[in-house]
Each structure stands twice: as structure tokens, then as C-alpha cells.
Length: 92
Image (cartoon, rainbow, N blue to C red; front, side, top):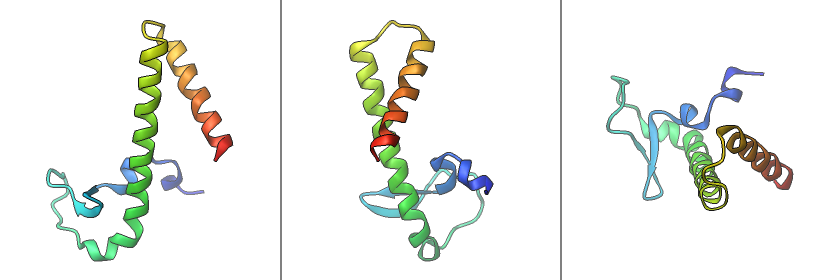
């Protein structure tokens, strides 16, 4: 098992992003290095696409929570999120 297996997707893909379906280097990065995108494209595009999918899933869950459960305690929100993620993992 590797540390990278447990990193959030956004950490795995830094300092790259997808813009209009193309891999690009972020403009506001902390790294002083200008990366060669050709060497990273094959590796980074799948990570970034997965990141985008995870953010869409998260946004969908937050919207659902806000529509149906707004005002409930944080502990209920966290249980809801964990439950929804467990359901989605079983479906995949």
C-alpha cells in the first residue's frame, strides 16, 4: 500500500487542471517549476477527470441535503454523506 492511495484526488493531480477538456498547468501554483505537460498527460488526465466526477457527486449530495434536510445538525449531515458514499460504492 502506498501513501498516494490515500491522498485526496486533488492532491494527486496538483499542479494540473482540466480547462475545456484539456490538461493545463494551474496559473497560481506554489511550485517554482514549469512542468512539461506532455510527460504528465497520460497520468494526470484520468486523475483530473476523477476529481471532477467526485466534485460533481459532492455538489449533488450537498444540494440534496440542502433541499431535504437543511437546518439539521452537522452529525446528521456527516451520517448522510457517509451513507450516500457507501451506497454509491456498492453501485459502482
